[in-house]
Image 1 (spheres, chains in turn yellow, orange):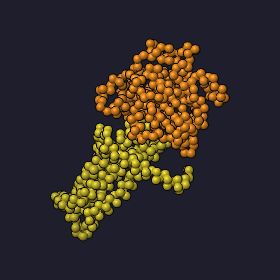
Image 2 (cartoon, one colour):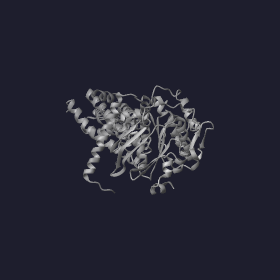
Image 3 (spheres, rainbow over the protein chains, first blue to last red):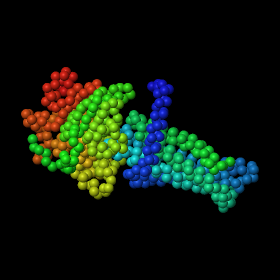
Image 4 (cartoon, each protein chain N blue to C red):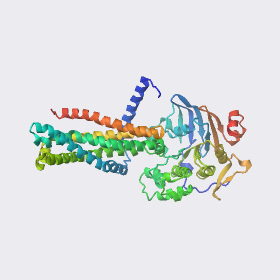
Length: 260
Length: 282
């Protein structure tokens, strides 16, 4: 393995951050320029959104049920089992729904985007597109970013709902909590700030998933091995960024809404 | 020599073309990872001429094409294409210029998720305001030019290597570009298929009078281009009489160690006494 100096390593990383920032910036600024590739955006929304429905619904239901099971044990000790719906509701809407959906979609779509664009890069299809007078960022990146942001928003709502349903199913079947009581307490505990926090995060995560996937795809080099490397890196980096950004976003939004 | 009359696809009239040489390189230098690939390269491509670029592997032949298209920027020097200084243009400005240039990539670089029809029509559809029905006619015309009309609904993976190159040529010429760049169009192909590709390139040169840069390893291809012309009456390539050989708009450029060691026509190449060039062309 080639050993590179720390200075070179730092330069490479700074260059990568700069390139990523430029790509991310251009993907957004292209929204205000023509052509807008609506058909490509709809196609990507179908691939990313509809394609992710089963995994997001299944994972949401399971995590909601698991949250109910884990929390019930603690709540029972204090005789507060009736609060189970509130706990599942807050946990899913504010935190688990967005993060879980982000991670699931990251595993499925950041890798898909990176491998697709990576294959196009190493076979000179991206160069061919530029040579044909088409901007690959406009044609390939912006539609993926827009569709991932929009679809992740709706997928998160679905995951929240499935999580609450999972929690409801286990609360009523295992712990004998009244179905109506569960849903009414789940609903009543939520305030605007909770819902806002839970729906701002998927917008950030969607942007991370698509832009990271596109960046690694467009910078892939070294043949099929390079495509594989880009795919792995896109999933690792986007997942890590989702978790880190979630932490900062939570802190920022809590400060903003004066949460305690 | 029979004057080439009708173009399959109508070329741009001379009056609408920008004046001056099609392409100018002035002291262009570029290095990759500390290794100098081109070092002070200067040459011109006159209008309507095809220039074949030779050199050993890694001598910077394909780099010249990518520089001409503005896909990469040189470390030093200036490049003009169709009167516009490529080296001073932004990526956004380059997209407009690239619409006047056609490029055939070494491995064809066809979009593998699109059919032949969609690949060939890509540029027209991207230019907007045209429906898929409106592009049918030019797509059929250009596919008929490369004799591949029957492949219109196939995907690139269903085509042979030679067919893919021909589709790539069709994709490059559909908008009647003023300059064509061929990157090893016959590389890795059998002699029969290579001859078919060269016939198409000569046909494009003589029918549409397009200026072209052609990177190649195969000397026989370039010699064939310098000694043959496309006869529109018979629709086939014809050999020029011995006295007229080299009279077609064709020149040669040889690279060595990042520098140009030869730039001239067939007569000058034949008369060249440089031992390296003699050995190269022997």
